[in-house]
Image 1 (cartoon, helix red, strand yellow):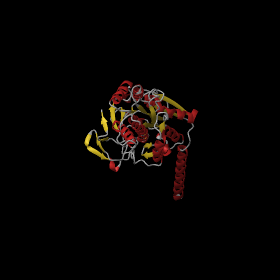
Image 2 (image 1 turned 90 degrees about the horizontal axis):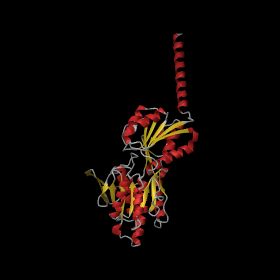
Image 3 (image 1 turned 90 degrees about the vertical axis):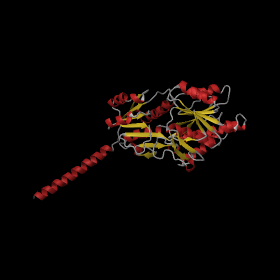
Image 4 (image 1 turned 30 degrees about the vertical axis):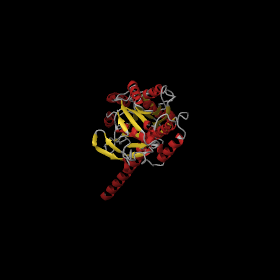
Amino acid sequence: MKRVYIATALTCLVILGAFIGIFRFLNLNEERTHLTVGFIYDNDESTAYTYNFSLARDALEKMYGSQVTIHTRSNVLDDRMEDPVRELAARGCDILFFNGYSDMVMELASEYPHIQFCQTSPMDMSGRSVPENYHTFKGEIYQGRYVSGIAAGMKLREMISEGIISEDQASIGFVAAFPTSESISGYTAFLLGARSVVPRTTMRVRYTGTWSSYALEKNAARQLIDEGCVILSLFTDTIGPAIACEEASVTRPVYFIGYSQSMRDVAPGTSLVATRICWEPYITAAVEALMTSRKIESAVRGHIHGNDVSAGFDRGWVEMVDLNQQLAAPGTEDAMNAAIEQFRRGKTDFVFRGEYTGVNPEDSSDTCDLRGGFTENADSSFPTFHYILSDVIILE
């Protein structure tokens, strides 16, 4: 009789355990009807980078309407991240998005395991151990930089053919904030795109040491123009370089290629085109994942590196903006589209390739022979190409 009782009890426990498991599964996968979402910006929407990021917030509002409540905090410095995070956590945020590079974000994620922390990748995340609720993401912008370079190269070729400059004067400039691999990867791809059209193109680079200083960026651009650069681009936050090109164009031929947003409103006589990272695909998919109780990386369409995701033209994470047909050289759009089509088909190994040797500016013994090519974003959404191409890139 005792054996019967024991068997019955065990059967009941098994059934109860199965019931609890099914309940948890159903509850875990139950769709949610509302989320509270927080955005923390390192700057405000007056800067191109943050404005571009805010477009994803707008897309979220449009897509979900009253299903989401959105809180935004702007001008949050990297070392002042703690208070805004705690404030938004107290306001019931289910997910937080960050466009800044603060190391503090990952640390704070550990304190709030019920909140998903999603940050634009601040570093090479390959092989790093991170909290389960901490995620990183970034568009593979080297692709847009390369296509921007093609537009620059087409204009250079036109200027050479019209006798405005000689082939030896095919010089482009780049204003960058800091000498990080993200900057180096971007301006190198830009140069290589230009050299795919005009092989003798050279580049000068000036660093400002800050992300957002109109005066420093404009001054750096002016210096590059004075040194003979006829087309400029940037990896900083203000319109300073665009204004410098517009002002200089009164007396000499100078053109500008933007980043994050079109600059035609402030530099209509010099802006050729711009490229931007589209943050919308990731952010809307991450919210959808929470709405349907799924892991974020299972809902995002991109190249998954653990809790880190990247993508380019193939998934709509990178795009070209506002080609100025009045200024662009004939054939520019077709040349750009041909490269974009290759990216969309998954072919990317033609960018960082050629008869070049790259040298790590911080360690001359660390070199890269591009005859064998270099694949960007292979293991991380953060760009890792950190080599200066000898003889064709001049650091100021």
